[in-house]
Length: 390
Image 1 (cartoon, rainbow, N blue to C red):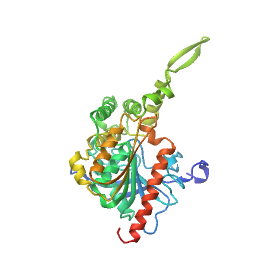
Image 2 (cartoon, rainbow, N blue to C red):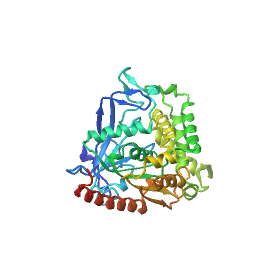
Image 3 (cartoon, one colour):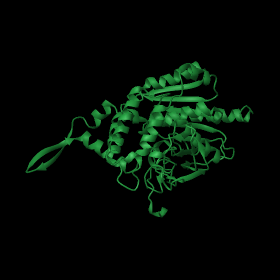
Image 4 (cartoon, helix red, strand yellow):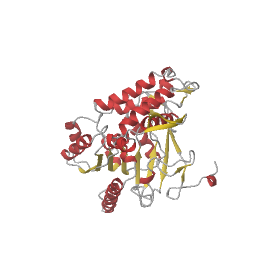
């Protein structure tokens, strides 16, 4: 692709971004299985300073990938959190070195079910090993170490990305200065698991599922599209759907008469499903949703003891109209951290959109994160200068 032919939008300060790939020999999974070799796709923004103390890792949600900002050299599309990253934005690339990687098990460059199994010379498919949030984080640790970064100034993410933030703080506290879990939880509720299971059943009952070994043939597009439609309903709120669609219908003129062809919301959901199957893999959907469902950081007592007097500074954010990751789950995180005498700031942002509110441009989230990072970065630098931080 010729870079000169890509016109960067005037409101995008991040320019053209190329996905990079970090490879390592093997990774021992929580299950005990060995995954070898492993590739992690990632993108970076800004510059890593000489002391390598300005790095921030962003973690994506279920359907996200490494392309978090800028214009992709491969797809010519803007990143999923474009409005949050860049000079003067929340994750200010004049100050910070921002990294985002595609999760282990993903389908956008990282090793996952669609990758070639070297032992068989064909895609892993349904034989791809079970992975966990801890495995995803351990692969990210290898990436960060490969970039010669000993400690992340911050780690942030929403939904499944927030679980990764929590796991980093839990398992690798010595590598994290600040943490920003957004619209997330210590563990899924029965309702959250139920919605994911319905999506998985939609995929596995598709006639083209073939136990996950569909590569090279017909793919389970109908099942994956239905799974996406189900999931997308949970990402919005009743208020936002009422505002966006109401009971409006679509009409066509036939024989001089206007005829209803269905509700606008029906067309919207079908579009979401059809668009999703063009960019996502059904095996990854199943693999990653299982990792989300089985994630359990621990009970209140154990978590309080584990985080007691932690040096990590936390900013926990929830959204008022998020009914699939409701504010009470964020408050559980805050309560544990308060019991543990951790430094934690909490804000529930009043937005009608629902769970996806953290992915939609609005001032409050950006201001909260910007101030939190800037205040703590100055404290971190001062502490290092005083010799109190390695």
